[in-house]
Image (cartoon, rainbow, N blue to C red; front, side):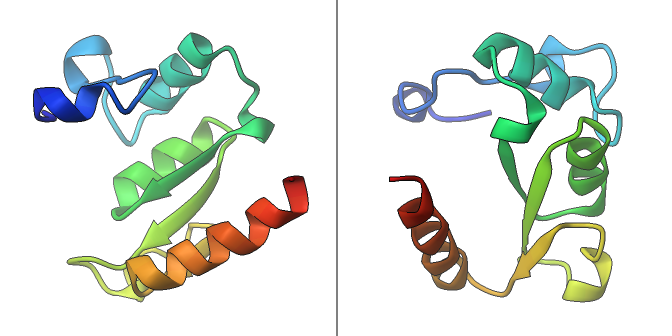
Length: 100
C-alpha cells in the first residue's frame, strides 16, 4: 500500500490484510492502538472518508477530517474538518504547543 521508503516513517502500519474486518469496523484502529500500546484518548486519526471516520470514532479515537475528494457535508462525524493540508498543519502546530 505504501512505497517501501515510507514504511520506515511509521512505527506501526495496519492494512486490510492485517485485519478480519475493515473500515467502517473499528478493528483497524483498535489493532493499531494495541500495537502502539496507547489508549484511544492518547491517539488521533486523520481521515478523508466517512468509513474511516466511523472506524476511528467507534475505536474511541478523536478524528480530524481532511476534505479531499469528498465535501465537508460527508465528513460531519469527525471532531474537526479541515479544507486543506495547510489548515490542518496550522491546527496541529497550535495543539502541539499545548503539550510541549
